[in-house]
Image (spheres, rainbow, N blue to C red):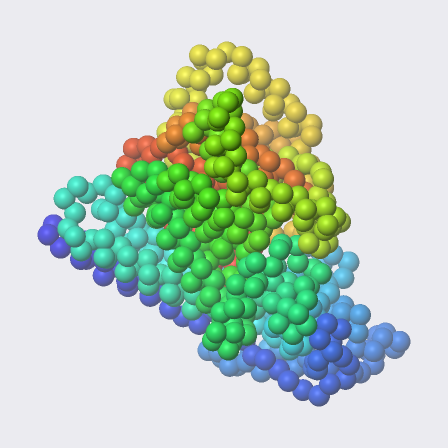
Length: 574
């Protein structure tokens, strides 16, 4: 068909606008007289004190408000002064708080005035009610959220299908018209613009609140907030743009983060073309829709800037611009301290690729010259750790500096098993061939599986929060021996699949031991920690057949958009 791509493009635009062009969140801010001070800002909050008839000694306060969506929504909520939620009514129907307590295993339901979206999602009719507080002030916000239904999944499927048609033609059609590239670019651009519109005014999502407090503390007091662990490079970068545009709001910083995402895309293109520009198209699509990263394009998190600097570092490294690579790695450390591992990667890569680790004679002097930026960065980081008393800037008890844990390694390999499933299936023959040719591997894998089975545990306190999808997944697999065994088998197979996946250069094998060092110091199991190792693995690996690359791209697109909608609708958070 002569016009098949034109039809696919129009179908794509129609599907994207049909799916994402709606106001999914209806929220209203309240202001009223002050009866007590917010303990963070000492600002005003809404409260109407009264004596609870069932508990005469409890002084409580209440919130009331009206919403105007497709039909009027009326909210009435009561709280104690110690932040326990007593009752919530939607349209004069009482929500079952006892059911929520049973569901989440909670004794009490608390509201936190610090701005964190509380763990409460109670359904009534076609709505979900959640309580949140926004910004650095003390406003209380009630949100009416749409519940994802069959229509929403149909819309998502249409978007994935329409993007799939354009992607398939772009990756496999050798006679594709020049306009196909524009069609794919336009469709993805429209998709991302609408995704931003959906989430730009959403209340804080998890750690966004703490990053916002960091921004406000630096701006208003000229000091760092004690609840944020990374160095303030990311926050200073955002504040610089805030000064330029005279803006300070969550929505503004989310827009800036999307700009950072575009820059990180440029860094990725720079890196992938330093390896092999022949496959840059599919690798770029896989970067844009990488499931663990895409939601953070639109949120105030450090991950996108951190990843962009690491990719820029790799681009310079692959072009043998060692000083620039080292400077980019140091800049990434100012955003996230664990990026010091990629500075080590730069140094070892130079020693392997240029000197084959032979430092005899004059090689030592020239190797030191090539690695002078790496050495200076390493010395500066060591001094920081000594002066700071650890790697983390704050809450050292939550992020201990000198301990090692395997939980993030296991979880990252499990993510490889799921997210790279088409590649893992294609590698099956190679994996079985490896086990057949190296017979010692089978008992070794059995020993590794036994070690995993008897040592795998989820013991970080935050990983007990059942409102996060990763925690539910972890506790599901640790609930029984058979599930733990299945999880372990997935981890082992993912490791074997990685082992048989060819990389573009042998020096890039450094990724594997250094990825372990990158993941092991972190106690809390967090999917975001797997972003850098998995994206670098995808960057460094040699592409397989077009069909496998297409299947992998489609899996990324479908998964990433589903995860985004989970964040946007508060249905789940990874």
